[in-house]
Length: 303
Length: 252
Ligand SMILES: Nc1ncnc2c1ncn2[C@@H]1O[C@H](COP(=O)(O)OP(=O)(O)OP(=O)(O)O)[C@@H](O)[C@H]1O
Ligand SMILES: [Mg+2]
Image (cartoon, rainbow over all chains, first blue to last red):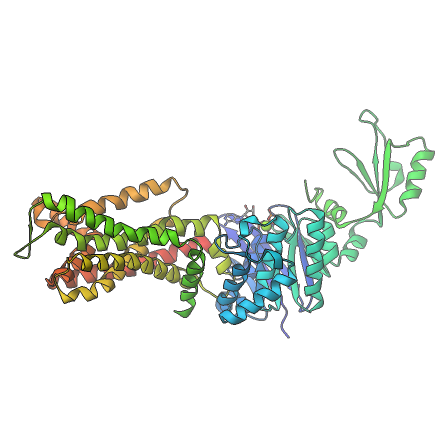
């Protein structure tokens, strides 16, 4: 069976500006794939090309084995899209939003009604079924957008920043729903600024920065490849001028603290204490994708 | 065609909760005709139309049907189209489904046409009740009104793709409102000075007013064919331009 998504040298330009610069990526069927990157990295531009609404400037792209330039309609009929900005229909109720979407996908009114009820349950919005979209919380709107995108039982679901701006509880609820989809064998492609989200939801991911892919792999392999197992975060008083070169470890100076990449954080901390360089505060944590991004680009994902 | 109809379904669904918006416009014709009939109409002498003297209300009222079709379509393809295009991103959501951009444009044009048509049918009924129709050709007036609505919807949708903020609509209506007065709605073409007549005849509403008045009076002529051709051309050009501009905005 054809790959869910296959891109070769995929490029998107807006006039002179290059938003996506010759990226290669492959998403297998049933896989959960994430694009992690900061603002302006080109994530949405890539998603819009995959969703067939934005023509590629150059390069090859195939989605579900079809060409977006010529088979857009066939692709869209098997795909669900959750765009970055809420484009729910404000003039309609929660339930009508799903129903009319079902109609757009060719369902009869009767089928659209029963599908809407099933999806409202999935999204835990049954009690808001008759509400206007404007009265929903951010998390509810996101759940509705996802429910709506599932009205055609898609093989592939694109989610552009599904949880940006949501509180932790709303995020966890969404993650749990997305997990369920993954379990059912739906291919998920999502973008995110959040490394914990990429770690939670993706089997494999690419890190994007400035229109390019800078790393690719599973969350754990990326961490193993680019950073140490642990990170020791330390803080010294502003006036202290502490030299850490003798440790022989990679360090990263941030505005408010210093990161030391080490396989054994507690041991490294002990070395500092024993040599009279006790920090004013310290923390040992597991290395994350945030550290991978920092190591690769010298910048932080979320400023 | 079926796919485009889904946009009409969407609009019906959304107006279902606010029928007052649609209904309020339906009282207008009655108020207007009442004012014309008992007020203004009494003060103004009969006017000449194709050699016959007819009452002033009988002259003005058919033109108002064209105006109603124009206004219904304009309202829909200005504020509402702009909102869905730029603010609520309704069409971005639609384009993530199997529907195409062409379906979106055609669907919205159909809806605007139907809305304009609905207003004008109410007007037509009012005219019949006030005894202002003189010919059986009048049964074709709804079709003429739909054509007028579709013509204005097509051009207006194209114009609206250039609107960048709500304040731009002042300009939009600055361009469309003079048509109401200028298009032989209130006086026959012969009343205008000679030099102004070609200008009047070049404006779109003139052709709607002229066509519908000829149907109401049973005075169809070769000029009526010209009217229909003008309106059809307006639809074809407006629709093509609107589709192209919408593609530039929505599928970049
Ligand atoms: N229609 C457009 N016209 C011009 N430039 C655009 C357009 N769409 C996107 N861009 C530019 O392309 C770059 C990449 O944008 P894109 O939306 O793909 O980034 P992103 O990774 O999704 O960012 P974010 O995390 O902020 O959503 C940005 O610099 C953006 O300004
Ligand atoms: Mg984005």
